Image 1 (cartoon, helix red, strand yellow):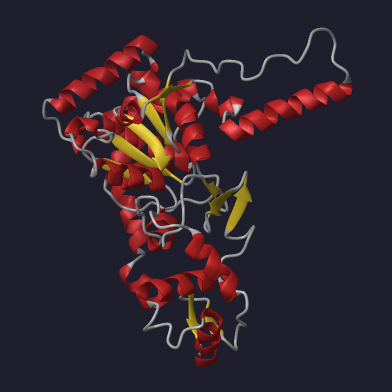
Image 2 (image 1 turned 180 degrees about the horizontal axis):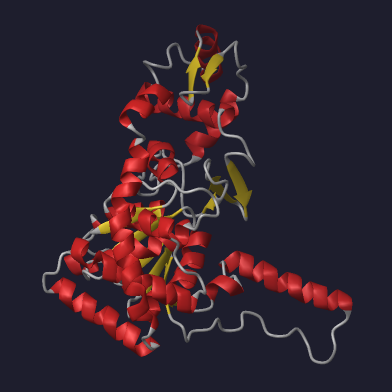
Amino acid sequence: MSLLTKIFGDPNAKVIASLQPTVEAINALEPNYQKMTPPELREASLALRQRIQKGLALDDALPEAFALCREAAKRTLGQRHFDVQLMGGIVLHRGQIAEMRTGEGKTLTATLSAYLNALSGKGVHIVTVNDYLARRDCVWMGQVFDALGLTVGCINHEVGYRYDSTWKVPPQIEELGEGELTAASAKEEGGAKDQKRDETGSFRVQMDFLRPVDRRAAYQADITYGTNNEYGFDYLRDNMVMRPESRSQRDLHYAIIDEVDSILVDEARTPLIISAPAEEAAEMYYRFAELVRALRVGEDYNIDEKMRAVSLTEAGIAKLEKLLNVENIYAEGGVSTVHHIEQAMRAEALYKLDRDYVVKDGEVIIVDEFTGRLMNGRRYSE
């Protein structure tokens, strides 16, 4: 490859070189915006928004939009986009993949193309890795968008938020008593507050400036942060509503995906399915769960870890027929019996406590195999 690179040149270097004139055009606008007061900066942003909605092409508006976003970030966050981050923003706007190393400012880079595409008024989704990052980035980068006159929303599990610079978290727990606290009671009180915040997800740093709203209001914001699972399930729910006005999402327009390889390759193997609660009695599952514990791996059944499958051997089939007191499990029990046997075997052999799932307050909660986080509200199919 090094010989081919010498002959034809580095294709990556060619792409970067082609972006340089646009970066220079953005930099040339910086002195104009530096002179503006905060209200003037917001007015310039809203004026650009009007021009775009009247027909100005986004590509033509890119230098102005990026220069405005950089100035707003510099004033609100104290962070000025570097030229390489401007290049990353241009690449994202084009619908391509920008690879950046840890610490190079992916979150800040995403604000550029998110702001530009949000000016059309059609909405932008930013797909983060987990709920914590969705809340954090909404508050952190929400300052930039708010300074430019745009609204920002956040979608978490069963709750939505809108960025509001004036909103503060109401006190979660009242003081335990009057007067001075001993060291032990102070520690106990702090532990109680931490436990309460853990249960509600109400981390003080992330939740200030996030005003709770319904999901529809969060999606109506110009820019919405959330995880791929939340977006996916909301899309499925919207396809099940009886009336169009009951949908939470608006028409899909533009999205930026963080950790794109993980989301579109690894997690794409896990289907998103909305299903009704099982109507049949759970007794059958309990019964077969007890039966399969008498089987031995390698003797009565084999495990295929790669395919996440379990198959009975001839000895296993004979043992089950004896335990169930039937001549042929495939004939007498029918599909239902075989289904329950296979699911009970998979549960016994493939799914391990505190690895694949945890039991909390009498409820099975699935552990996300990619992030290690608990997935409340999700359950195994079949």
